Length: 443
Ligand code: 5AD
Ligand code: SF4
Image (cartoon, protein in one colour):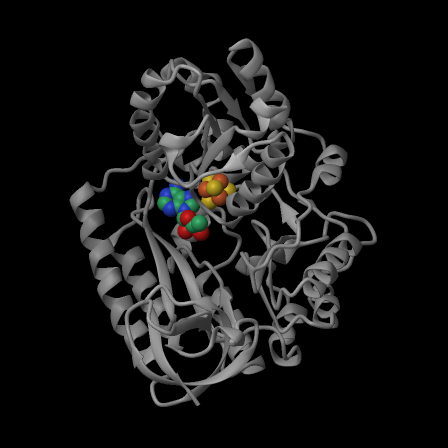
């Protein structure tokens, strides 16, 4: 037993909220077999990377990191090195072949097997790999249950996987088919979190808008929101991510009706060109998208939108790109997460001819950033001088006596205040807007 309780693990997480939640599960499971988490890789007996393969750059990062751990492994042959998440799912055996000093690989559906895998590697110094996809029933049983933590804001998974097959996207290939978790279970978890002090719930999934549609008798996502809204103790609700095609009128109305629902939606448009949207297999046109945005703004005039946009999709012309810029101006996004197109294995777009030079793509990317910079600055500058409700989350990284929280639009605000305010919604006058946060004073 002693040996076990002394063992330490180091875990690094890349990518989206799904991986963040999976990593919490990994921590729980490893603690269950006597491991303790440490912040420095060179103190650890077990090093795990929970990886992302959404773009080539994210994937390459994994190999870079593994290289960094090689000297540790040389010094300590007992050290166990493992890779999980989306790169593990995508690469499987190839990872073990390419990285000779890697001990274990576990895919996105195999996190529950980690304790057994680790113990096998420990005892017998074998290399282990598990990357099989599980059936629906098993996945529903294994849905990550969350331990109550001490944070003000928590993610709750409502669905996993994705059936959309956007032509550029690796997610359906590395996360598998869509499954929605039963609403009663979600509600039970939200109640437990709220009773434990959590004030903000973010419902997460690859496409929350299609929640429940494939489960007979399940409620819609809008109904799920209404039920979460009734839970005592929950002050704020957010959700991510939304597919514009599946954004129903019923859900749009929630922004007008549900007081606790934050007035922000990330509604990834990906492109403003109908031709490119079609090639992306997105299932809507620029006009369809703008019509939904108009309805959102009508239902909730204070709403702010953010978006994801891909620049340089195969065959994107200057005209296509101009349509994207035009749409951005029309919507007036508060922020945009923009990405250079990256060809991904197994995707349909990987087969499409792509003749645009890297320089031309970069040039478009820079123009998009410059435009968004202007729009963002105009949006966020409107907050200066106003008093906004801020949900306080903790001590500020800025140090001093500052604490921080977020506005309804998910903007971080730092201000002077007592730590006893953590977990409360307090009025704060915004004094300065920086590029990624705001400074304020208690009002
Ligand atoms: N290349 C570039 N960006 C991508 N995204 C998804 N796949 C790719 C890809 N192959 C972006 C999309 C998505 C966000 C999470 O990542 O904009 O919304
Ligand atoms: Fe998340 Fe997609 Fe990256 Fe996987 S590939 S971590 S699902 S963003």
